[in-house]
Image (tube, rainbow, N blue to C red; front, side, top):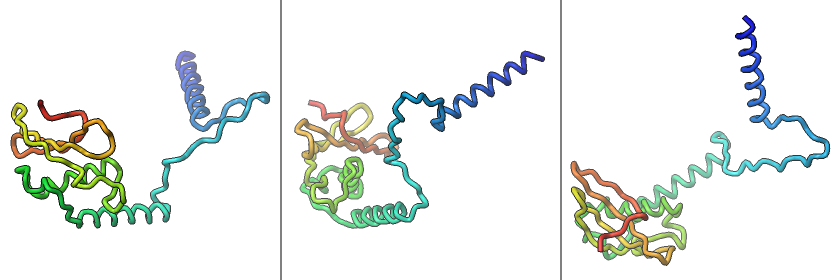
Length: 160
């Protein structure tokens, strides 16, 4: 059965080649410069005590943020439940990677309620985000059939 033997040899050669590529083992050329060191930024060890400490601190900051009651002129004017309105600026801060405790983070007062618009079978409420980009950017809450709601931002604007 030389055919199976050739297949095994080819498979074995392929596996070895892939392993060499994965582990960076290759023939070295004496005249060739060594490769640049690998950048392991962004990698983490979930069992590292420092990592655990940072995760715990972030969770405590987020819990604290949930307890703060922001004020903005549009709260109570949108027709949405209070908890949905208050979640919008929190959602946007998470998207931006901010915490309320940071001095320049997005605040509820940075949002200007534009209004509610019926679009097909859904009602879409829009807020202009007065933060960051000089181009108008909008956040929105879509209320659909069966009490379904979707929160988002960017890529969508209120109808003219």
